[in-house]
Length: 284
Length: 285
Image (cartoon, rainbow over all chains, first blue to last red; front, side, top):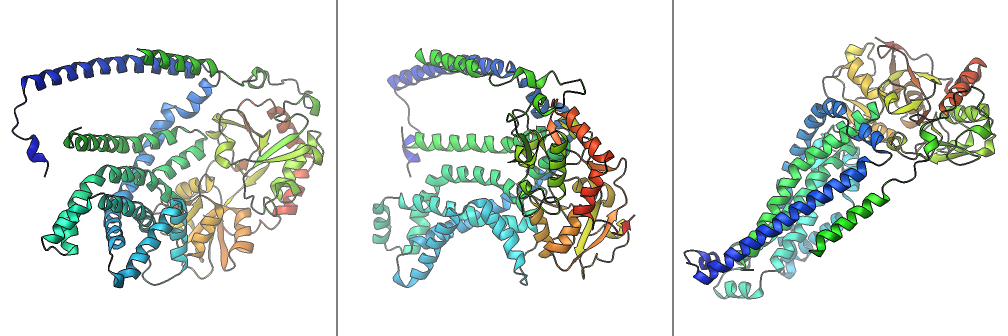
């Protein structure tokens, strides 16, 4: 809707002058930032390296040999993490959106659904994720019911989906609430039903607004895929832990941390990028 | 321009507060003379007291009632016996709860030695000091009585079993090197989680050390049985050792105490008293 304003516009001479000044200022800021960062890092590294415990810390946390020895196992465990959170993220989107929509229904006859959705978000947002994983992972199979999955990875995905579905439902709800009531009023006055108003007017705008917080939750979910280790499967953290326990050297944890960072940092930068783009669109 | 200066100040402050609390005496200067093992000459975490670490919950048959300080259970008894050799009476021994993971963390320790069924391995010995072994341990397989693998007579028959182990145990390595199962074992945080997984039939069998196997079958899962024990895990026999900080000045003294307990037959007596049932499980080969 708002893209139209920016396309095909020729900036004035004054505007171009303003942009040049802004760029020059940006470059200066960047170079100052770089220099001060380098000075800061050098000082911190020097402080760490000259501390009395450093030789021992280096040996126990930064051992190249242990890193190399653990990496293949940790990386193969990490494939399981990726599997877990990719499936969970897709499911979370569905559950979150449906729950948010259910909470938005105002028709009295649908009160039970609304109440159920509220109960769900209250419960699963309030209980620590690791507890949900524990209860689902050990509790569900203990029921010994037909058709309940016994695969630990599946159970882990169910637990993560339940937990994060509740967070994401609230994110969606906030997005839906943030759409100005005039939009709904306008859509309804055009004769659109509640469902169609949601589908064609509210959700497209709401979704765009909640992309940064959604990605934020996904970064969080990616990290929390490591919690599934508590119920048994050999994911990255567990593989690292096994190496640590057999050598009493902590470097394998660092290998696992690195793999998670390789994944979450780009996603975090992408989130920043989206947020910045949204800000620019609003003309700030 | 004020900000870089502030940053600099911050960094300098960081540098200024970095080198702390390293009592120069602990890392170096281990008492080399064999006579330095009297109570007064030991370097202790808490002066006048011998502080012994172990994890919580503390399981039978190693401890009793999750209370290491009652002197009951194999490891509690061994710890008090070692303390006695070093000249401490019972009131001078205090216990600290130490998670397995932090028992080998570098830095200031909260214990003089840690007793937690830790197997001595060469790799681990690069990070901590072990006392001489106080117990020779074997690994055993536990399964549900009417399960598919309850009647297994050899390791080959266990190849397709889904196996559960506790993380950080040498059981995991034994599973990998001795059974070599076709599927990855499930690895649990706590012993009780592995036990529940067997109850829930999420795993077909557990691999634990033999005394624990007796406890599992006697007290934790009624319809479970010991399928058998591993004849060996290849190489040297696996032994439990007391864990101390790398370069601990206490090590020679603790070693002396363990040696003395062994030669006096004290260790055998404690083992007989608390792990007496741990014989007679069929050997799997």
